Length: 85
Image (cartoon, rainbow, N blue to C red; front, side):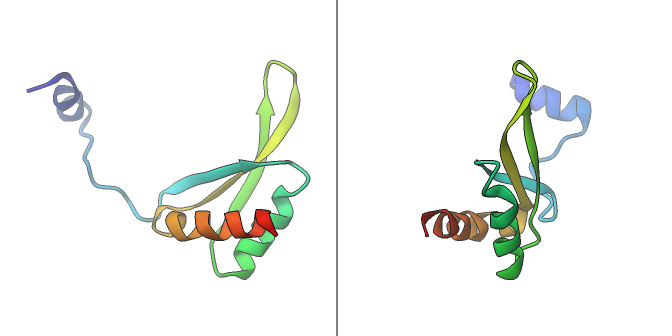
């Protein structure tokens, strides 16, 4: 038994992933973040977003976009499409 296995047993972790767990799919420029989230929602994704705050400079440096795990792969493709064009 390795260290990781011991920690999983100790904390009761499992390898299973909840498909509804929020997953970050990207950090985009703050000016385009809310628009990208709306376009993802219009495309049927359950996207949410919030400012990425830099504690060193005390400013928002980007916009984090989060979707449920089961939508993440398709949402990344759609987000790249949105940002390109």
